[in-house]
Length: 231
Image 1 (cartoon, rainbow, N blue to C red):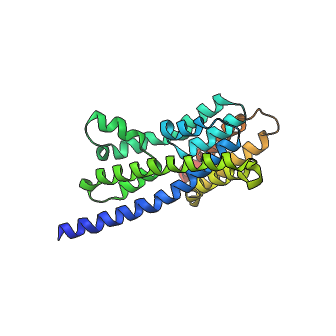
Image 2: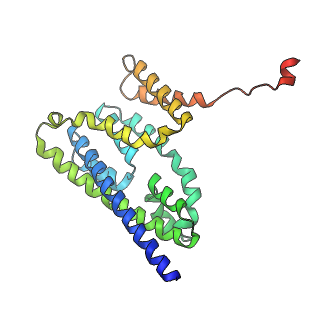
Image 3: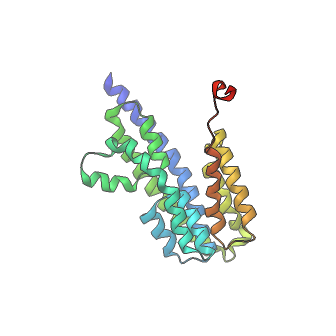
């Protein structure tokens, strides 16, 4: 009976991995095409997808590099990927006990990998889920990047295909699931408003950094209880 259940679970896992791989190829292709459309050398998107492997950070970094602000690209990427610190703590046991596993496995850590791993109720299967999803996403993302680079180089005039609009569209697609939460939505809208208002007066890249001011909406003064109010 357990063998049948494990077989069914493995089929579901492979099906989910194939589905998310198809989506990653599409988004990775968008990233590769955008990088070429912004005039970056072909080796840049390839190196970022293999060495960095962080979808949202790569999109953001490419936009800031194209704007001529590499320092902002580095800082923004570090801030955006800071969320991986708690993710790493949450899935540390699933990666494996050996240092080799942890060093290699940490490179495959993404939002999707953490979500699939933590959604697995069977502790014994979490390691399998982590590595299958991680390797699948890494491979599909790099395949997509290669396709995007080829597409971007073959068009001649990337703007004619609307690739200039693909960058913000891809970022919106990445954050849309998170906007269901009211607090997250407030932070995002506030940060976007700050960035738009500061764009005409600040150098490229800085308005994006200033958008972090949206996090201040999470800081709320504690309400005094009725006893203190009466006093």
